[in-house]
Length: 116
Length: 112
Image 1: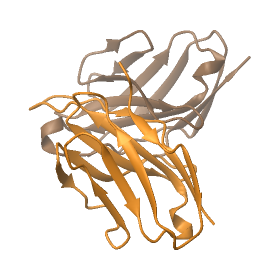
Image 2 (image 1 turned 120 degrees about the vertical axis):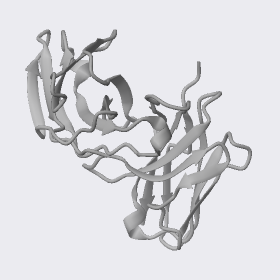
Image 3 (image 1 turned 90 degrees about the vertical axis):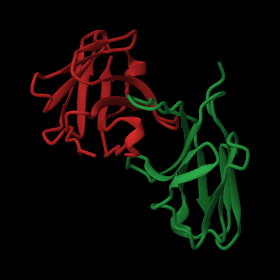
Image 4 (image 1 turned 180 degrees about the vertical axis):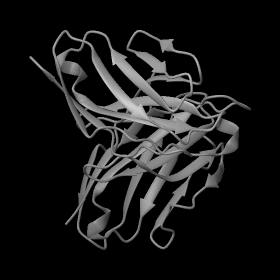
């Protein structure tokens, strides 16, 4: 079974430019997450989707960040315009969330963004 | 979600058991204990999780104290490839909407 796929793996852009990251979750997983990971820190949640609906986007800086998951499968995270402080690894994860109990999240390899 | 406390770093000799501790003294009755690890330049990898009972899988064992205020992840025979940052996370069941809080984890170095 294929894992979570992310692209690109690396991206270098100049500040004020737009950038987009793509994520394809594990087949059948209804919940998708985007995380931000700064150097030396653990991942921090940006947004969580249940199917097409963004159910938790409280940590997403909405002035410059946006995300979508139009058909409840693939997702795109966009930054426009990028700032120097956005340099980080952007991780996507997915899980099969049932009515109760544990839901294990599986992570992709991440996209390392460098803003110059 | 309850937060966790882990030592920032540990060393372990190759072939020996690695015992990684985690304190979660404010854990609630319905919160699971999860362990993930992150090898350099990769995404976090799921290891194991448990609620009350000890758990074992092909990667590791999870020992949870009876009062659930702490746990230990055991890698029975550490190899160089186990060098990574290990995160202990507590999280309420999926339908409560609570998120994973990773913290800064324990950086485990396996020494040849």
